[in-house]
Image (cartoon, rainbow, N blue to C red):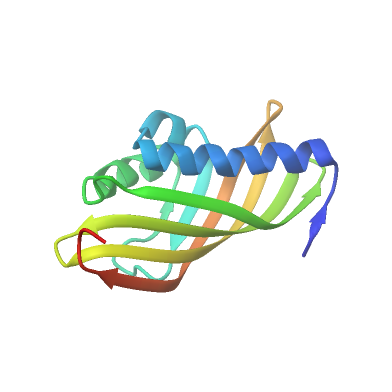
Length: 142
């Protein structure tokens, strides 16, 4: 998959991803939740205790609880591919997160495989699947 489809849609999808990342860093549940379609699905197969969550309201509720464990998180994301087909799109993106935990500073890298849908002229995530790529844990203060 590469970057295909109308440039204005690809830009809007990049902005969707950037809005998501900004909302994570700011711990803004309202802005973060607005990136999801009402009937969305979020899958975290590397976290079997969480698994897959269905529906925007349930996804946001789960995220709000989870974010209590990530104070001071810095989250970045960038697209590796975007393919637009009318009012649907697929996107692959990579993530980088830094946050403090009791055992030190975590630096995580991950990958999302996404399906997106345009609703009333705005793009939303309809399905997101996250996989871990790399985790580094170091002492605090570095």
